[in-house]
Length: 313
Image 1 (tube, rainbow, N blue to C red):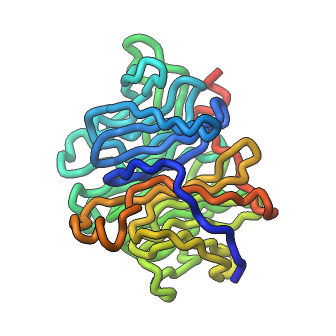
Image 2 (cartoon, one colour):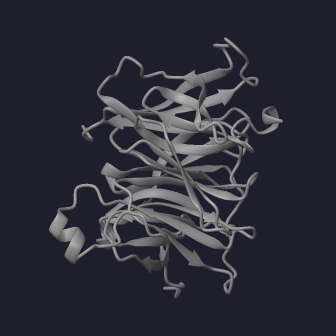
């Protein structure tokens, strides 16, 4: 396996359930969340400042939208949050408003700017969740209720997690309860998926459960391994494990390439569910934000798409 650089702590303030890391190409800052405490974070790697916005409800993930606005998957639904005003300014959709036992979890935008986001049961009940696609039809205006088209893409999902797309017509998706990374044929024009198959079976490697995921410029998958103490790099074409980055905590949740040259790998972790004794003696760094400097390697990330793409000017 490849030897990868070590991870270091960049935000020393532990989170309960850190998640949803994504690099915003508009303001060149890292967006990430604390799901259970309802916090949205904006991390500036130049100053080290980690601004927080308290949204007072669970938040599954965040994606870039405009320079000063992002789209968040909140308990209330898919909403626009203004980073300057530090508040929700528009609610776009909530197709599961009647499912009070569900919440939104991980999600990302495809290269055409469609937001794919999954739901799950609050207590990880089997097959209670689904995967949805949200397509921005036009920029939201006052009182506008029809700016987003919502389509369910998958049903019977338990823990909807990592998702990403390559440039060759595939979408990769993780239902953590299955322990696999699944590949779909992806029609980028229609935004539809078909022909599901397992391309990587993480259960064979005894490394915990696959969680958040991103892709590098070589088309390899980087996956946060919950209860696995690491981030793993996989080849989706062969299923081979290419390398690992060890973390000093078990609950590794999401990964994102960032920095001006997309040569830093950011990693979120969680402390929830761990006893005070475990946190003190075994995992004192659980819940902190980590980064790996890849500038001395040839490994680079790819630019995160914006929600709506051409409609966001």
